[in-house]
Length: 176
Image (cartoon, rainbow, N blue to C red; front, side, top):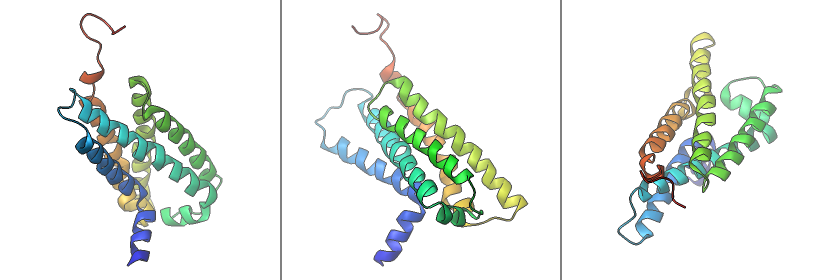
């Protein structure tokens, strides 16, 4: 049973980290004094999404693609190649931006969602191509990874949209 849970977690990190970020955000919100300032709840959810799904998620991706490249390639249904190293270091870049954006400015938060979203949506397109052209239905190509490649950008952009009002300057101008 424990081995199955470990395998599930290690095989689906994007989903596990997305859920874990939501649970942590909920815990933070429940523990805060009420009432919350306007926009505080969505800002908390966004910051935890960025920390878990972008920062930690892409750090995990870096480790897997760089240090366990053969295993990653097999999971995706590919042969290992130098591309694994390139994906790993791109992931490290996204992770660093995610960690900086966790408590950073609005612009940094937008960047932490946009860059990985372009990558993920491109990867989802690549997964579809591999499913159609190569009949690649490996778990790392057609499983949970495929769906989180679509839904993480959707969730990220939705959270950015929902937090837009809490970061706008007042009509009198920016606070000094």
